[in-house]
Image (cartoon, rainbow, N blue to C red; front, side, top):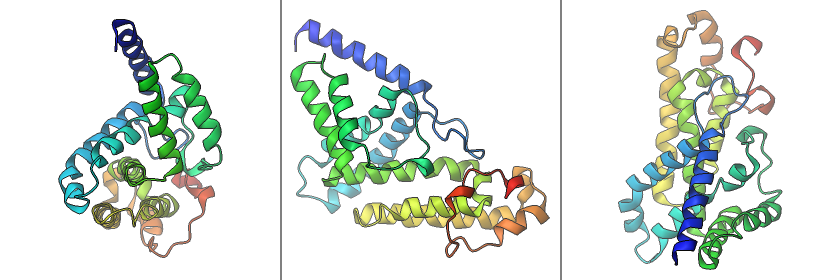
Length: 237
């Protein structure tokens, strides 16, 4: 790397980071506020950092597992940074524009040093195709971290369809690894426990008990998901 190439990398990072900080997630969702792509990536990286020891134990022969997972993780939403907006997960048609997004990403990194660009393209396309263990782990972290905002802000868990979607979103990434499966099971338990606690104290989120009970009595483990109701405010359910 020479100084001119270094300057291009610095400028590229500034551009993508600043844009990522302005792109809101959960747009149109009445239950979740405050997340953006930059924060989403930081939270994914933090969760990954905490499970690295367990992943190394589970996959002792995967030499480049950590490096390749980090690479997939950090670029996985760059198509949204390029486009300037995030399509909410519940409305997104996944994997239908992979080739188009890979081409767009390739064009976005053409001014970077060749080795840098090739490394980024490989990480981005691998995540899109989900054809490697690192990509699958990164996708699992993506889903789990996306659910954390719903759980932390609580009120969305009153809506049985928002809740059921979160459960299914977590269950989708089971089978990736034993570590991921344990995280998925723990997160689903968090969801169920939070709904139990909300039944005892619905005023915590500004609801009257009678109104909350109508939704919180529903068994979300057997509830049939209706995606049309995920983003409906409680008063319209």
